[in-house]
Length: 500
Image 1 (cartoon, one colour):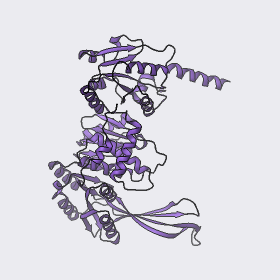
Image 2: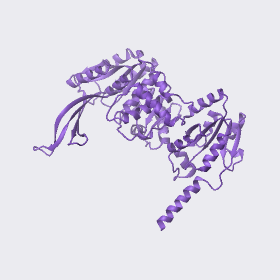
Image 3: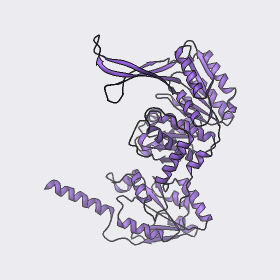
Image 4: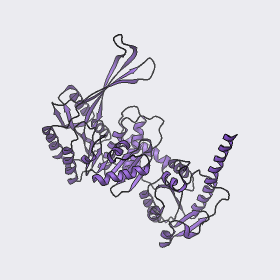
């Protein structure tokens, strides 16, 4: 039985035209594509025979384009130069149904242009051979800054969300962001920031949500972020240090980490992709998060939807826009693969729903490294003790603490997948704490089950369950079968082969 949120329905039921402001560094990408089959006689350089020129929206303009494609009423706010590139950028925004009423022209700046030259040699795949950037990176002058502040803050309460896309090109000044964030907070309008690299995160103080990647987060806190635990701790430090309600740290192929202001953290895994082009994935995450929060979606559901959208973006070459139907379908497919894996809050909600329907709940926990017949036998017995079986699974970091640096053998997401494949298991929850007591308190199982030679008073969490009248049960073990014995056997065989 599955009681997790139907994310596809959440997407389909979002408000039809939320009004969203996208503020930040507006850019234009120009792609000149052609044939590069010879070297110039003038110098040892390739000659590109141009066949096509294409303009695409970049930076904050790309975010505005993506949000508009998702059905939002979007206004872009930023600065362009008094030049042909700036005019082209505004036309491209308008063609994407994005309002440019808050786009200010500054004759002292150049519009940011990233020009890429892409060549194909014979029947080979096209390859970028040169990129030329034209841009102004200094902060806005006071008059332009003042004008932009007035435009944005005068009508900020007309918006359902404000997205700030900072590429460190001078538009997102401290004074501008301080004023916009302050006015938005007063109007109870959520603000979401995708920060620039090497930026002082104090300029984002008091935002509703910040979405840095692993590198940006590491630079901001001055500590490396390599593991899930380090990501959760880093997110908590960002929230505490800069008075931020929530931080979402994107961890590339490791998924995303959500940490709220109270220090609670969760990891949301991503699905492995055969095609891996990360271009535009970060902008897509910000766009979908903004759309969801503007529509009143809970942050835990919003991040899962954004995760799915990022995966769809990665599947496509270059920067692509998605519509709601594509994301809803992606959510439906994702749910079919991993609907048994749930978060702590979802587990509590599920347990409440099960109890309303008169179902009894059994809970057990373990590492489940190298899933074997002993595990399966014990889980089947646990499932027979109640209507529903929920299983807590130790994260990789907690397994290392319990079993040593050489364990686990199987990655946590693979262990979750294998347990989810068992028909006797209804839901699985990953946890990193020393004990599963937080899960036990949230779920309040009718039966707490542990496999082994323990007595009931040795089972972790027994006092919690017994206090509200639940039962503790210790199941039998399959003699001669354990993960440690299997690992030792494999190690001994490897040693013997090497010796031979």
